[in-house]
Length: 290
Image (tube, rainbow, N blue to C red; front, side, top):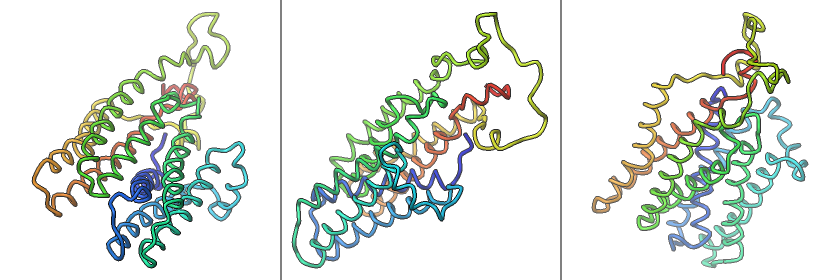
């Protein structure tokens, strides 16, 4: 699919933001007063900033509120509901810690659960799409959740927690790439199954549907060269996992910690770009792109 910048920003920032909110709701790190204010400001800034970026990809952003009414059938609506309730719960929890010196554990735990639920529902928006085999895998929600938890632990300054979570996220990323590369072929979808003529032999397009571009080609068909993709995967892996782990192994300093966070953020953004750019939609078969 065509990797829209707004969606990349949304999935990257909101994943990190809600990951940090998850740990803050559990009292990690155990902060209060203005130190807590800084942590919550970062978490809310990333979460809300990511959610706002997602509205720019809607065909009619002014109708965004209507998305909340379809929670029974739409993962997008469930994502919106979880995000709002998570932010409200964590907002109340933050008010108690920062301004009142109170730790309302109920709101913290509820906010942590809803924060992870928000990341999960975001992942399910893509996982449910059978038309994109690379997304329609059990590893997709695991990928989103592992990235969110690893990034959240990193932002929370929890080195002992972040190290193993980064290793787990790195392993999930490798498995996702390996399985995703075979997903389209393993789905059994081709021109024969699409046209219902597969039992008569190999089906091939006689000529392209048309010579110009259209909405489907712009939105759902984006071909990334294999060599180009391999380079971006290496860059993503080094920035998101290898470099942050190396920086965490060095005796702690705020500069190295900041560098680890920025490196991880850049790596996750690159991974997200590939997530969308390499998503082979079955409509590409019709145009001879798959």
